[in-house]
Amino acid sequence: PGHVLVEYDIEDPSTGDFMGELFGIDSNCWGQANTNTQLHPELNGTSISIPWVVKNRRGPRNEVLFTESNEKEINNEIKTNAPTLTPTQSLDYSDSCFRARSDTIPTSLYNKLPRPIINLGFPKMGTTSIHAFFGCGNYSSMHYQCSPTYACGECMRRSVEEDLPPFAKCDHAPAEVYAQIDYYDTKNILHYLPQTELLEEIVHGYPNATFLLTFRSMDKWYDSVRNWYNMKQRMQMSNITGFPRCKGKNLREFSDWFCSHVRRVRELVAKNPSHSLVEIDIEDPGAGDRLSDIFGVDARCWGHANINSKIHPDLEKSNKVPWFIKDGRTFGKGDLLFQFDANNDPNNKNNAGDDGFDLSTKIKNQSSISPDTDHGEIFSIREEKKHSISSVIGKKYDLQTNQVRECLRPRKISVSEYSCQALPSPIINLGFPKMGSSSAHAFFGCGGLTSMHYRCNYAKACAECIRESIEAGEPPFSRCDKADAYTQIDANTKPDYSFPQIEYLENIVLGVKKATFLLPFRNMENWYKSVR
Image (cartoon, rainbow, N blue to C red; front, side, top):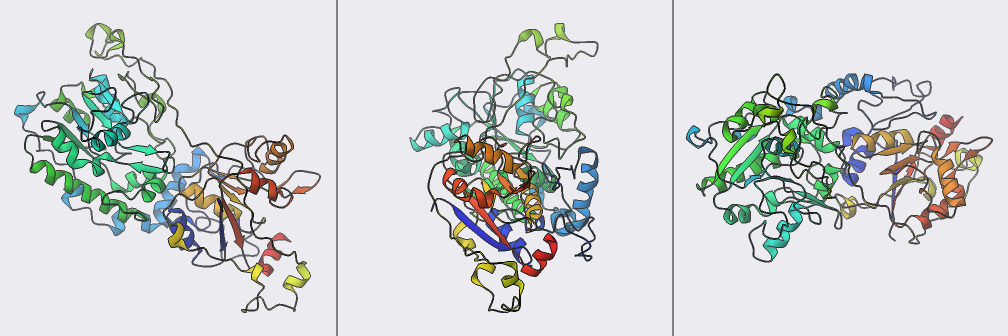
C-alpha cells in the first residue's frame, strides 16, 4: 500500500487533463511522441508531436532529439504552439500589482534605510542576485540558510511558535540582509514561505525593517518555477496562504497568486509607515543603478545568479556572479561557499583594475540536494492473466464495446485523492513499449522532472543497470542514474529483448519502498500494428 498505481489510456483525449491534474503538470505538456507517421499520418512528426523542450530527451536508440543548438528554436515553438502558456495572448498585466513602483523611497532616505533588509519576494525572482549584490557591497547576507543546521524559514517558524520575533531562533541572526527566507521542507515534502505564512509577524516583529519586493514578467517566472527541481509541484502541494492546495495548474493561477501577494504586502506596509518598501523589477536594465542609488552599493555588483541555463542560454556561466558573497550557502546544506576576503573586495580601490572594478574572483560551484529514495517495503500489485494476441484481437472480443476484458481497460484512480499531493517517488513505467513511453517522458520532462527513457545513463540501458543491481543484491535502480521518472525500462540488450517490468517485476515492487507505477493502455489493434 505504500505504492500508487496510475492506469491511463494513451488514446483517451482526456488523458492530458487527468495526468496534469494528478501530477500538477500543465496538461499542455501531454502529447504524442515518437509516433510512426506511416501508421498515424495525421501526426506530421513536427511541431505538433512534441512542442516543448524535455530534459535528457532521447530517442529509443539514445539519439539526442533536443540539443543546446536547437533549444532556442524549440522554445519559439512553445510560444507558437502553446497559446495557453503565452500570457500576452490570454492575460491582462495592466494591473499595478504586476509593475514595480519606483517612487516608494524618497531620495532623502537613499543610503539611510534601516536594517534588516528582508526580501518578501517569491523564489525564482532574483533572490540569489540580491544575495550576491549585497554581499558584493560588504553587507552580511543570508540566503536560504540562516545557520548550518536550519533554513531561514525553518528557524523563523520555530521562533514564531515560541512567541519570539521571527529571526530569534536563527543561529546566524541578526544579519543585515535576508535575501531568501522560504525553503523546501524535505520531511513534509512542502515548500514553506514565511513571506506569506508569517507576513504579519515579520512586519510587527521588526517595526523599522526595510522590505524588498521583487518583480519580473509572469511568463518567465512561471517557466523558471516549472523548470527548477519540481518547485511548481512542491508549491501546489503546500497549501500556501493565497495559494490553496491544487492551485497553480497554469500561468493564470500563478499570476493571480503573485498579484494577491503584492497587494497584501503593499497594504500591510502602508498601515505600518515605520517600514520602507523597495520594489525592484529584476529584468529592468536599470535595476542595478536603482539599487545602487538606494543602498550605496556599486551598480556593477548587480547581475544574474543561480539561473537555469537551459531557459536562459544567453547568460553565460562566467557572467553570472563575478564576485564574492559573504556567507553564501548552498540550498539546504549550509556549507560555506564564499569566504569574504578584503583582498578581493571589489569596493576596495586598491584591488581594482583599470576600470576600478575587479571581476577576477572565482566562485565555487553550487550543488543542489534531492531526497534519497527509500527501499525495502513490500507491496503487491494486481496480477492479470496472460492472453495470446489471437484471443485478444480476434473475433471473440469486440474491442469497441463494453464487452472488452477488464484487463484491457484502465482503472482511473480518484484524482481528488492524490491531486496536488506528494505522490511517491520515483515514477516507474511498468507498461509495454509502443504504449506511450516517449509521451510520458516528454510529459514529465516538460513539467520540470528529470526523466530517464530507455537509457539510465550514457553507457547503459535501464534494463541493464536494473539487472546488474538485482544480481548484486541491491535495490533495482541503485546502479542507474537517479531520476524522478523512469518512463521506459525495457531495452534491446542483445541477444534478447529485456523486459524488467516482467522478469523483475517482484524485485522492483519489493525493492523500492514507495513508488508511483504507471500502467498505460491503448487499443490492442493499434498497439499490435505499432509493434509490428
